[in-house]
Amino acid sequence: QVTLRESGPALVKRTQTLTLTCTFSGFSLNTAGMCVSWIRQPPGKPLEWLALIDWAEDTYYRPSLKTRLSISKDTSQNQVVLSLTNMDPADTATYFCARYNWNDVTFDYWGQGTLVSVSS
Amino acid sequence: QSALTQPPSASGSPGQSVTISCTGTNSDLGGYNYVSWYQQSPGKAPKLIIYEVTARPSGVPDRFSGSRSGNTASLTVSGLQAEDEGYYYCLSFAGHNNFGVFGTGTKVTVL
Image (cartoon, rainbow over all chains, first blue to last red; front, side, top):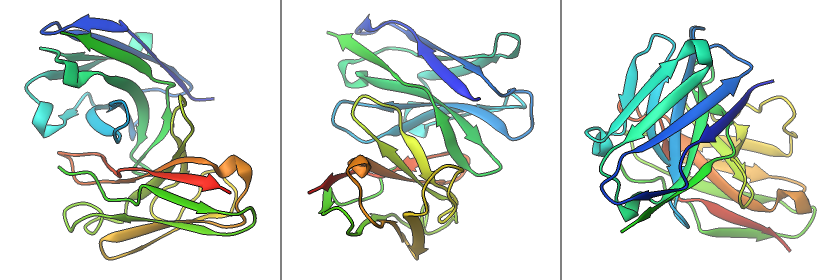
């Protein structure tokens, strides 16, 4: 059974760095074709893909946020960490982690999401 | 990268069918055969219901079907049930610089 769970602060201040952790089970990020990604959803707005790390530790970022994003993995802990620097109220959103399966080219399992608010 | 365009709402009576469109460009939806659809209830994680345009994950009823023509993909829900209410989002692969371009979302109401 594949599960993912996001954890991190619910509130950050403007200009601070947000660090979120995705803890997963039911699959290995060492298996070819397996990736973990972060996606966010601002209140009342569409989903927005942010970053992805694959089994070979290659990383990919949303071009418009590339300078602010960092994604890394700790395979021994089954965790993926996302950092987003210089937070702004516009970054207020529910942040989801999801498994990306290259075999089906889709995000097939998602965490419940964590709401992060940015205060000015 | 702009979001894919979906109608804001769609509705139907129980037992009827509803079709949701998702329009993109040649750089995303029209350029790849990798369109997915998700169902999301308020406060919940999105649930995958269609991938690779027409494939259904195990456990998803065959009332859900997908198709694509050019830059537009469609999701049809046949035999609407009350539990089908929620938001539906499409997703298209758009290359290694953008693993996912999502649609604007459609709220489906069962009358």
